Image (tube, rainbow, N blue to C red; front, side):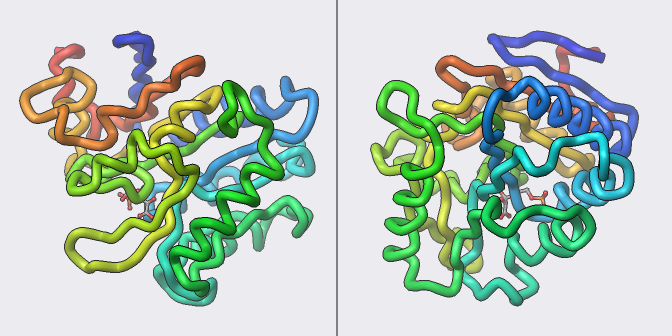
Length: 248
Ligand code: 6PG
C-alpha cells in the first residue's frame, strides 16, 4: 500500500521480510542508475539487521556492490569490536557475507575522542561526497526511528542538531549518556533520498504522530527530516503503520 503525504511516500509492507525486499529493490535500482560511486548512509540499531541479512542472502549478485561507498548516519563512541558498535552489527550481517572493497567502507571511528572524530569524519565526508548547494549530498540515507522520535543520534533534547551548520556532531543518549557521533539534519536533508525503515508495534504511535503532524510532532527530531531537493520514503511494516489514521 503506497500513499503520498506532504511530498513523502508511505509504503506499508505485510511484514519485515517484505519491507527488506522493498528496500533491496530500491537500492538495486538506485545503484544501477548511478553513473559513479553510490554514496550510501547506513543506520544502526536492530532494524537494519533483518535488511542486511536479506541483502546478503538474496542480492549477492543482483547489486553492483563495488559501486557503493558505505558511510554511517551515526555511531556509538565505542571500539569497533564492542557489541554496541553499529559497524560491528553491519560487519556481522552484511560485510562478512557480501564482498565489499575495504576502501569503500568509511567507518566512524568510535574509539577516538568524540569531538576529534566528529571533526575527522566531517572531513572524510567532505572529501568523498559531492556537494550540492555547498553541502555534501548523499545518494541514499537509511534512517531508523526511536520510540522517542529520535533519528540517527539526534535526540529530542538536542533539536539544535537538526539545523547546525556542521556535518557531524557529538551527541549524547539521553538515558545512557552514551556519547555518539551523528550526521546532522542539514546533511540528511541535503541528500537525494531518505528512507526510514521502521518495524514493530512499539513504533506505531510515534510514526502516526510524525507523519500526521499530530500534537507534539514539532518536539521530535524525525519530524524535521524532509530532503530539500530529494525524496522521503517511509518503509513501514503493518505493525509500525497500524495507527496511521490515514489508512483507516
Ligand atoms: C542507533 C540508530 C538509531 C536507531 C533507532 C531505531 O545507532 O541506535 O542509528 O537512530 O535507528 O534507535 O533503532 P531500532 O531499529 O533498534 O528500533
